[in-house]
Image (cartoon, rainbow, N blue to C red; front, top):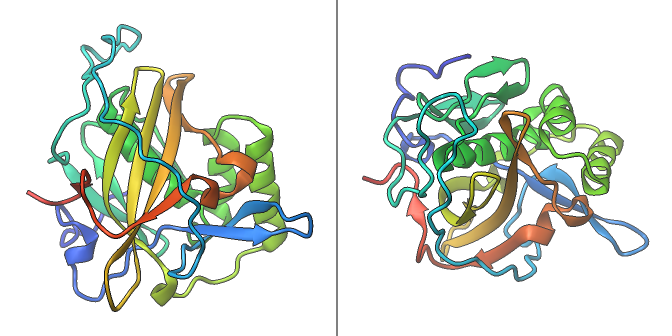
Length: 248
């Protein structure tokens, strides 16, 4: 696995001067009126259909399927303390010594712990690596190999292929600031990844309700309905109930 530069380690990316964290969401409005995911940018003026944030996660049945020893099944209430950050293109993603990813091969990072923190790190890694800003060498194999097979996944992949790789402008990109565990079991995790939209005025946040499932020894992303990230996005103006990543 590649490692971040020494001055990145242990520091949340939004605390570094001049550094912009990008996570991407795009939408293409088709002639038929269907909105499907197209890129990796959530701009300040993008529409955000209301998507409710689920209840506080509950304790799950103990996991006995992993060979890695006893597994944590209750989502932690504080940010993981062994996270460093590495760059994927112009985007910083979390890496945890205990939660993964264990391997990195080209644009694909895999091998996440079968725990709530493993699901959290996988959610952040996969949503970034499946976006335009990571480049085709990343988003294509990530979606093919690490998303659950479905018509929604196929639509997301087809739309990205048709669109090519338009460059993302740093001023248009949102940054990861925190998360919410919306639900967790050893088989399925629903995590609200919270992004701050670029804005000079009142802060605005986007909450992506990402669903991951434990399949074939790793966490796999469930593609959003219709292949459109906007379908699982809601907008808010505060961080009530959000664990801020990097806060101590």
